[in-house]
Amino acid sequence: MSIERGLGNLDSMGDGQDWNMFKGIEGVPFRTKQTDVPLVKRDDPDHMQPQLTHDIKVKTFDTSKPKELKEYTEVLNFCARKLGRIMEKETAYDKSSKSWRIFLTWACYFWQNPSEASQENIKYYK
Image 1: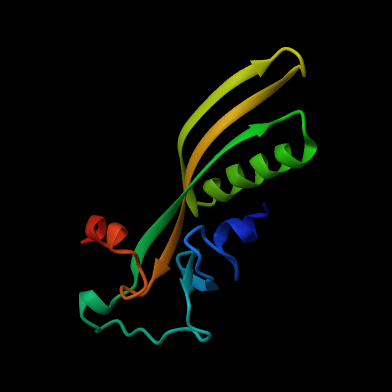
Image 2: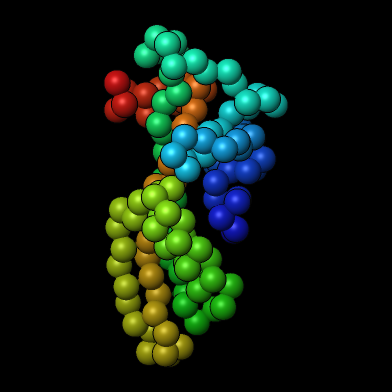
């Protein structure tokens, strides 16, 4: 999983929907099912303004595997850029592989049109 896939760049976000990604607000990407960037005006009513939404990701990383260590590092960098947030982290040392296993839960942030944001997320941002 690359960060681009994790962001949903023309890829499924686990809900069976494909998203197009555009440069967003303050570095947080804007995702939409539209093929063009939506026109949003500052004086639009609040219910028409983009909504900050998120997707939760969960994975256990095996740091003895270079691909998973790289992916774990990408997630940390992604969150350090304030595009996401680490929500839970647990580590365990694996004596057999002499490496760490890291259970990580993180959120990926997006801006969306209110009509495309899930109802579950909208209720928390009103």
